[in-house]
Length: 259
Ligand code: MN
Image (cartoon, rainbow, N blue to C red):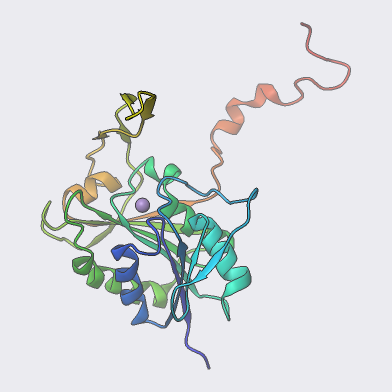
């Protein structure tokens, strides 16, 4: 029987050292295939490329670079490139945190959620660091997680969003299951001048962490825990359905709204 196949992708691009660290960690548990973006795709969320061609470049044995997003990579890998179906999709290790509302913007999380949609257990992994990015240090943490995860599995339709803290922030305390915290960015729009005198804008400024509660992902990494947040692609606010009861029957034929 062929070894189990693990698909690895990321949003920092095929050349990222975080991708290589995740490949090495995954290779202890089966055959590894890599399909990763040709260039950095941070912040593209779950975008799919629908209006232009995708080019695939051979980047080694069972390694491909794709001129698309992380979600494109997972879709093309599972439905076209791979010789057999992967048992696990890993996305990362991202160069920087994906905490709280970051999950809505993150290409790392987008790649993992696409794996979940394809029906494969999927995990997004990020390293919470600002400067040194000790990916080699994070490898055994990832291996400990993978060993247990491959044995016990992930509930269906759930993606795990994992953040590993930089040990220079706080001593490593092991993993902890968390909820998404509230994490905001400053609202600054920086306007500057390019060398030819034209104005350009830069958004996505300083991060402001507001939620330090120990059960949140932000709080956990702050204290040195590896954070594991189960997220679901069902974004339904079930409690709000009742409060929107007034919308049922609104605008039905014969009772058009009066201007
Ligand atoms: Mn990234």
